[in-house]
Length: 97
Length: 488
Image 1 (cartoon, rainbow over the protein chains, first blue to last red):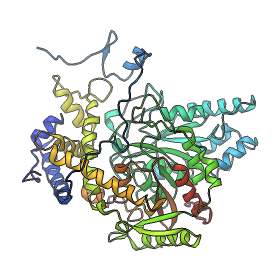
Image 2 (cartoon, chains in turn green, purple):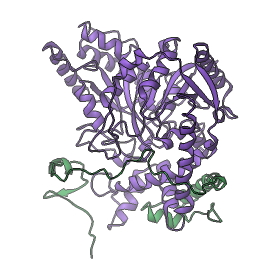
Image 3 (cartoon, chains in turn blue, purple):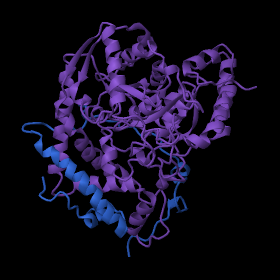
Image 4 (spheres, rainbow over the protein chains, first blue to last red):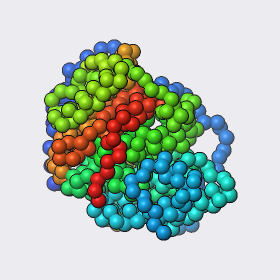
């Protein structure tokens, strides 16, 4: 485990998570999450030699859907919650300069 | 004409509907009246669509008049946690991010209830995106515990539990990722079941942690929970994590099986931190099973001490991924401050999410980030295997486990909000079942000296809900806790 678990680089992580935090939030979260990470340190004591990870409790593999087209949401349904729309498209800020 | 709803069970209401002693419309109106009379104090509901409720009830009555009722749930109102999709109804997930969202589709569980003829009744309050243990993280309102309105109902399915406890609806659906059905059931004095992971489709359940989430029923009795479970359990092509397994007739099995059973008591669940009145109540319940000829064995689940740490790595990691879809682009709150395509994410998410959700997204992003993945997430997944193996080892000796659901009775509003870690530690008895994928039910087993409900948790073997519910039903029917209700 990392040497300094109480030092989350909050700016870096918040940017990865696409979350704009206020300076107060950064300070509070860094402290609260520092406490949580200090608690999580106890996992170091578990002996995991030779133990396989569990991603899901019950092994279910290669569950494929039949390759058959099915109707999806109508355009109207798909757009009903769009913040802004025009001509059956969602309007967004410019992506490419 | 006003029908006396009087805290009746779904089974009792179902009988009366079948005998034409009450119509579905009268029943719906009685529930609406109870909501109007009590919800200013309880705040269980985020919204309810009265015309839609009455239309569903009329359709139920029409089916019955035509000699075509769909089954025992036809005409019975079922409250829905606002995290389960119902077409044309809100799906806020307790969040400003989805404050205006109207669902364009039905969850598979919703379709199960519709096929059974149930009357889908309102949208119930919850901790935002199912993250919390008190329903205090809802962006909209705080739900009160009907037994003491200065206290929380538990969470994250606090509204679903409070609505049943307050006699507003006979049954409801919630979701459980770390205890969010069982703990509120315990704190509100009702029955709540988290089924085996994969028993109920997660399609249409807004995802928090995909390897841990399950939908489950609340009811006043185990019989009611079995009734609702019947209509929503089963494999679903739209959920690739759902299991192909034959679904038994839970209600019939409940009445057939009498025990005695071999029951394990995990010693790690009876240490410090367990409130004396909870310990006393649960120990009395264990003694009752012993008096009925059940063999009671102490078992050990040695990796229990790691469960909370493992959960708060895995659940937050999965949540950071699942909540990335709430981006301000397609169907969520969009910030008016955004000026470019990256900004729009930052500001929309900052405005749309509450502090607990932000904390968990940050923690989850951190534990998955480059350089930390193996140390945190990778290690947690391995300890998860050890936790699961503890249970499977115990089940070689016993049929089920008996434990408390919550270390305490309902705490006061605001009591644990200052320290997130303290809130997390309250999940200690429920959390391991989600990690191990096991079914668990909380049944009322007594009251504290101040009259607050206490729950007994029974942990079952994978996909053996029929046995689990029978064990719970036997205890319930020999006691009268389920006949009590708060004075409102």
